[in-house]
Amino acid sequence: MPLATLNESIPSKNRYRSARRNPDFIIDQDWSSYSAAEHDRWDRLFKRSLAALRDRACAEFLDAAQTLQLSESGIPDMARLSDRLERLTGWRVVPVTELVPDDVFFDHLANRRFPAGAFIRSEQEMDYLEEPDIFHDVFGHVPLLANPVYADFMEAYGKGGQRAMELGVLPNLARLYWYTVEFGLIRTAEGLRIFGAGIMSSTTESVFALDSDSPNRIAFDLERVMRTKYLIDDFQQSYFVIDSFQKLLDDCYQDFRPLYARIKAAPDIEAHQIVSGDRVVTRGSMTYFHKRKAG
Image (cartoon, rainbow, N blue to C red):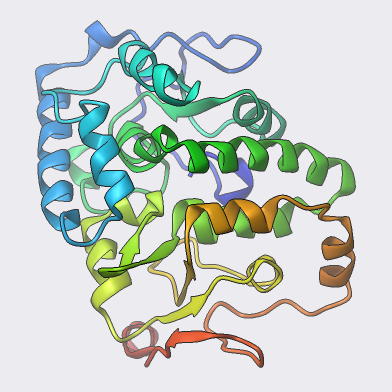
């Protein structure tokens, strides 16, 4: 989750933190510096995540991961990966040390550059990581950038972010990113499938998001999503379900200013709430969250 608004920068074993940064925060990935242990860590993360996602991720993600050759052994060289991606949709992946400032992030997206953390998580962080690493950013985010419609949506989001900063409404737009790009579900002929990167890069949440009876699953509505709070340190209490990437793009191709005005006048919605007008796909029991609170 590269948008700084969505999370705080948390100290970790990030050996790139002192790397020299360009004005746009891009660094040298220095791919040859990765150790054999780091490459092996990527391979193990990739293998177990793909096993969990074969019947859970959307087909667009699985097909693109194969097209982009993410299954090649070891951590991807972002330059080589970008060459393959650019031929498909014009996007490139650029290495950064950590979460970048919002204005920098939006400028990259608006110009079809996706900033990806260069470091890889430690052995102690294999199952839970609060700061996005290269596995989250590249495995989780990059495959769908090979889909032309989703690629257009991400560029549009970057341009929308620039406008949201000018209007002072970035927290509301950040919720759209959170509930789609990071934790979105999509309706398919085979049933609900995952497309959010935050779920993709977590084997435990990839099971929870689709199989658990605890969370709500609610049909996507732009205004509703932008009013809804979210959890940054646990599974989501509600997931939103889009009908298609084209419908998501169409919903977001509009002047957001009237929408922001309505949201400003309305109360926020708690992450667990179901409200009047929701098209509920599955109503959650919240059992997992009740047990966590009791414990």
